[in-house]
Length: 191
Length: 212
Image (cartoon, chains in turn red, green):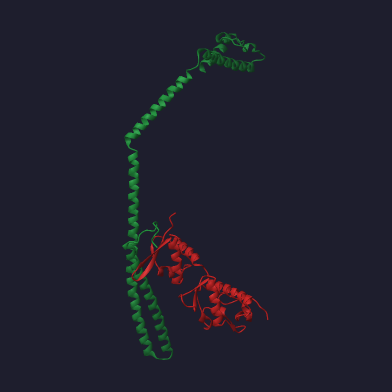
């Protein structure tokens, strides 16, 4: 059976390992398993970056039509990732700090860090600078749903909050809270 | 986390702006919701028509019309809110411009205090005096040569002139020696003895001496 890379409908290039049946089952040998998990982590992150997906849930492997169907299933070889397998991959991702359980205190869904919160912080500040929104007060909705598409469009609020917290720490932002919501103000750091 | 001094304080105005913007966001979200309902009613009406239930299709379309009216109303409200927000933000810009002008004015005043007319006049006077003084010193120094030295200078000058005259003549006329050009000769004697003949030349040399 030929293992080959394949470009799927969304323009994503699947690696050849994705058409290997053993890749979809948990391996008893720990070293084999850790290599397979590493491949999975890389595949998930590159796919998430490609499609701008932020959340991966364990049940995504069960529902066929979800955003993750193309990755977690391979119909050509009739394989899919089992929930328990996916759950252990998620655990590995959280351990490697390329994902975080969100909401916390459960293990069924994660927030993917295909950009680390620190990197998001830089992206956020750069966006605010380039769109001339320094020193003005922005709501979270302004950032996640700007009139002009930005790299931050649809960023999940928990991730946004983390990025803002980093900017606040480095003196590049200030968060403001009122009764029914919160906002943020960016500025150039004074040195 | 407001421990950093560089971060500006959150003023009540900031809170008010944030409140307004949050209201605006809510309106926008509401519009999104209505848009979804509109699309849904449209699909329902279409489905009813295709199955031949005209009256139900009309009901769906009526509902759609109503929602459309709501959308229009919220558009107006949104416009109001946005205008208010931009007016406030513009006023804040104006305030900061005013503040900038004020500071600039202060600085200018400060500079002018240091640079009043009297002190400038005094300074200029002093400069003129200093220049005058410098000139005097220069004069004194240049007049410091002794008489002997002055004499020697004059002699050297005449010698040089004689040299020039001789070379001119030797170029103009054929072989002619200027033998007596060496050595120290008293000025008037030397000029007359220069073997060039003709009063005009002597006059010329004299003239040259004067002109230099």
